[in-house]
Amino acid sequence: DALAESVRCDGPAGSAPGAASSASPILSQEPGEGDREPFAPFPDTFMTLQKLLTGIHPNFVTGRLETEVASLTMDSRRAVPGSVFFAVPGSRTDGNRFIREAVDKGAVAVMSELKPPPAPLALFSPGERERTICWVQVDSVLGVMGRAASNFYGDPSAALKLVGITGTNGKTTTSYFLETIFSRAGGVPGVVGTVSHRLRHRTLEAAEHTTRFSLALCR
Image (tube, rainbow, N blue to C red; front, side, top):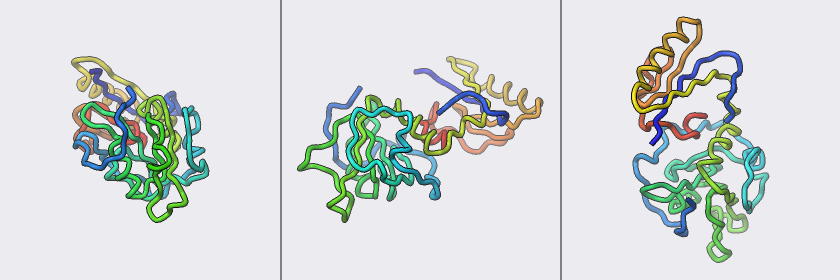
């Protein structure tokens, strides 16, 4: 697997925008710990599903594009009213198995590589049988999740100078070198690394994953 470290330095706006599962859904059980997201969504961020899909080209969409979106999540346990749930297929489990749990917790839209369930199994909002959940079918959920996160959180990487460090050995050491260089040059470096996440040379938290998912990075 490719390993990566990202060094972020505040400065003038720079560059960086933001195997389909064959099993059919909609069961409810706990995903693995490695699939959990570390942060809760911002409660004051809202936009329509149509605006969220800017730059994304779905294969199929059902439901109202004017639906208001309040948060993004790939962990059904963290779904709240207004969430878009990203049903990410994984090596240990399939996010499509947790769609019902996300909907029961208030998710208003699902982004999946699968087609929506047929009419008898159609998903409805709890207590609102007349309103079905929006379903967005895409070729790759992971492939569009970054663009959706960038749209939702206001393209945060546009205000940063970004440096990616890849390789087998030496990534962390190189990130420390760059962090010091940027700091001495008057920048405010932040590091999202494989060991820890730092800002101004201060460790904020230990790293849970080699590379964070886009929902957490943009948030």
